[in-house]
Image (cartoon, rainbow, N blue to C red; front, side):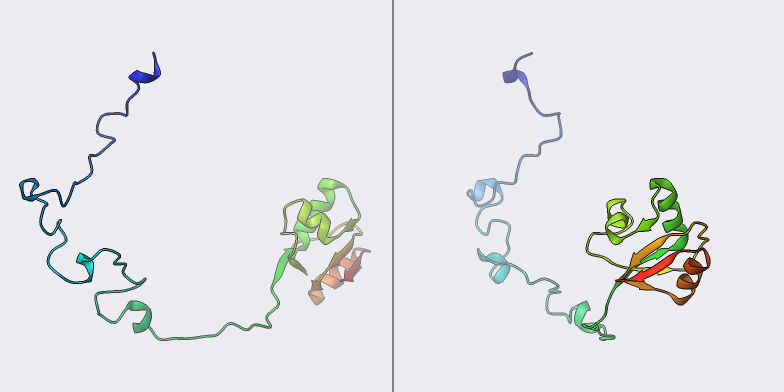
Length: 148
């Protein structure tokens, strides 16, 4: 085998349509673009969402809602996930750094602890927010909820 004998599989490469190469080709004259109009000219590009002059879908549908620029997004983390993490790595202090290192959140996420599942060991949990029931459950197990 040598490199000069390599070729693509049959049918995988299509020959492009050669337009504007004289009348005998069948694609001469207007080069298969029709007569006049923007689409027959070079440099034409259709706007995103353009529907040929019909009112575009994006403008036909009503506007609703708004985005609050002051909203604070928290990454929700439940007690059962924290308990599983603590058992897996064998630590008693859970910080956002530990949580992000083990893939439960991104590095810049704000973490809020919620009360789903059981917590059996006394853990010191550092997070940006706690639900009231999660705080009770942590303190009932002998741990500490530290708000950052």
